Length: 473
Image (tube, rainbow, N blue to C red; front, top):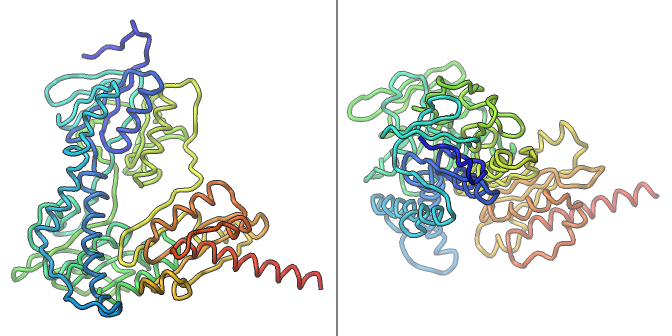
């Protein structure tokens, strides 16, 4: 059993989970002078690098290249839309997934910082509030523990759920199914559906809520649905999946819409219905740690009800994004090691999804903003944006929402090419509390999609001046 190193008079920190949150927590705790041990069941990098965003974005890139080929004739180019070698596309995505360890040598990089890394040892489990054990019997205790165990795909409690696939299964597929049904129309479900239809599969998407990507601004949801339908996707909203069954070599998906039961035949079903904390084998029963639904409960400082045990990343359910996990990890490590406590209180979390078309957001949706503020909303349609016209990508918009009294940005929502890049500027404006006139005066590069932010801000400023002039008259 590892004992606290009292001779060096250092705090000991045990980080459990080696994804982006775990690596950041370990590095920050070490920077603050702690003696750190990092436990990881598999390879460092976690879902984000090994099975999630990194390989998924790589597939999305391949799908985008194929879609771009459909625009050849518009630019005076000749050539056929490429055929898809699905096995090769998956192999390339897996190559990118392995990049963190095979090229960046992530484990070695972390170890070189002075952190003890114990990886590829299987899941660790609690023995008591301050001690964990791994499969070979070794036990690890520490003054402070930071749990960064991430999440896992949720299974629906329906008949035949064992016949469905998750993102984990995608990376071992060698052939593209002719027809795929995606159950769950939030960010991950929409992204997978978009990739597969761009590769040439027929796609159904089933979403229980009344619109796709329910957390998004309603204009994002509606325009994304329009875009999906225009590409031939079968979009079923306000629809619940009832069962999955084998029938004549295919899968029969039964669903209910407006109290009417119907079904469709498909070749593969992916369940994208949630991402609860990955608590398998953690043996929280041996501790006093409390849960809140499918997540580990934490306070504003990311500490559990057990003193000295913190949770960062997806396992706490606070903000389910890689960038949030990394930020939370630094906060948790700070609180675990230093004498000053810091709340996790992000001002601006920029999010983006690499569907076709892309979409991205930061801050409040229009509905959220209007609950608390007197708002001004402005939308720049991409048909009025020079770069969008040049690129032949006019199917998009940029929407900003400001508080009329303070004239500060409350939220921004973008759909169309380079949305995830455009939103970074909006997030910076929001985080720094810039006024709308300051955003309007930014000298943004021409021609770019980011100009849409400046155009929207300039239009608001013009309208405000006109409004002031009318009042004076």
